[in-house]
Length: 469
Image (cartoon, helix red, strand yellow):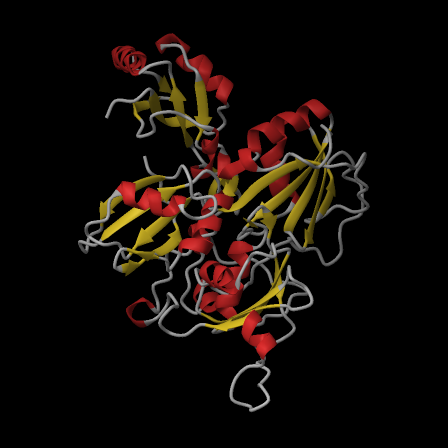
């Protein structure tokens, strides 16, 4: 269907919005440009021979012109004089989007508060879902394209893995933040959320994988050096007991699997902090059960922003921690760690037959019928992903319409203005992809709408890496 938004493929991976505007100016006036960064990664993976990261070759973009007629003229001119870059033809077609809105910003970046101070030459970088080892050299290779990187410091906080990157000038740091915020280092993992730091200068005392002064190579080398990561050296099959590692991390070369969790001790119970008081046990179950079967969820009576989530096994808990730590729910970053407890205890009532009243109000148990990985789906874990803006909806009635689904999602927090695409899978079942304004909005809707009643069936929701184009 014709649209005033055009979809452009096979663009060089290092292109910016300004380069796209300049290259396509001869074909028509351009109003808006959005690089599809959520689908793009800086690197495709590691070279098995050299162990060096391999850069992604191409990216995509959405371009909006004034009117549909202008888009048609744009396509006609392009077809008459196609554009080739490095011997590779660029593809242009109509997008399924009728217009570009702020919600197309990367990973919902437009909805994130800027915060973290004024412009500064030091950037604070949060690496979400760091499946691959993160080193100072890797961070340098990502950022040095935009200026002289002087120092890098990598560390782990409750919010997740973070880096401080110091440039030679404020202008270089601003350019790097604008270009890289929202991208992923590798496909579907190691996402970058970038703010300005308030620090005036980084102090680096030794050079290694965690700290490095690129201006002063004469500093002493780190002792017992190792990359910073939140994963495990176990193989993907051993790590998850059949759970696949998201985003192709499992296809890396031997020895590139993430190192141990450091001070974290594996447990089937996760401690989740920084929650809004309105978050319920069911909300947490709906979210955390995306990564494994959940047995119990308990809100802590003395700390309303804390909760415990008990999984069927340690590997399911680790999968949830790796995929969710650092992402947001209702605008708050999820702070997730292993609990010191191996299970959630139930205090009996006076007669010994039921949970005590306090526990009954704050804790909930979940059985075989509501969990995802049971029966024929017990090993169906290859589609496990960190939160995205796209939800996959299944268990739909054959008569379900896109309008009906849009109205249903609009009845939940953050569910308004979603975009729905219905399709039939290879087994003949009606399913849908649903796009929301941001990752946080999609996460909020999943926590509220999963297992909700839609017609005669209960709606099943999961995160998807597919797109609506």
